[in-house]
Each structure stands twice: as C-alpha cells, then as structure tokens.
Length: 162
Image 1 (cartoon, rainbow, N blue to C red):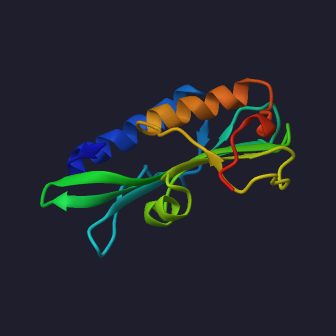
Image 2 (image 1 turned 180 degrees about the horizontal axis):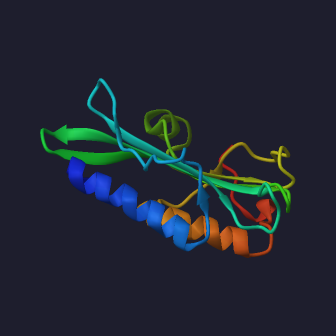
C-alpha cells in the first residue's frame, strides 16, 4: 500500500471510523483525535487501541491496529509494517496478524507475514504461524472482527513456522 502523507492521514481516519462502526470504543483522551506520527527518520506510523462491546464494564475484549510507512520518495510512503491484534479475555483467546521485522522473518522463515493464536491466552503452542498478507488495515480489522464474532479459534489447525 502506498500513499501521500495526506492520504495516509485520511486512511487512518477511515480505519478509526470502521472500528467505531463495529462498536469499538477507541482509547483517546477527551478532545483528541487519531494521529499520524512522523518520526525523525521520516517514517510515519499510527496506533489505534480500543475496546469491543462485549457486555462487560470495563470491556474484556480489546484490539490494537498499528501500521508503519517508510518514505520511498519525497511525497510518497509505503506500508512497511502492520500489527492487528485481538485479545478476548472473556473467551480466553488472542488472535493476531503481523508484518514486522521483515528482514529477520524472511531470513528465518522465508516469509515476512505471520499470525499468532493463543487459546487459552498465554498458552503458546507455536510462536509464529504461517500467515496470509493483509492488504490493508480494513482487511486486518475485518479479520479481527470475524475472529471475535466466531467461535474461539482452533490454534492447532494453523501451520506452525517453527
């Protein structure tokens, strides 16, 4: 995925709006908005964290959406990492889709994307499962919501990279 800084900011707003349409309560201090951060090295990043409406207070289902973009020209950025994660404490599972540390994953596993599945939370039968690339945060959020609204995952059905 490639975007200008303005388009990346619009994309961030769209992802936040999608989460809110799913009923998520975003963790934003009063009066603040989602923010696209620019690092000293010119990379852009964002993090959205929130709670899902699971009928408890405070909610026991939480999600996080994180992405980073590296500059590839003066006016253009390319997504270089993502982390989409769901922790459902009420049903005792974690599901995640990741693209981070691509050089290391490429050398170690010959892939750059992977998944995580824990059921129960903290029980890790495999550190990294084979994953499929997520086109963007909209696909990542949709996959998290599918996991949240379905039966808890059967982690053993996934392919372990170890």
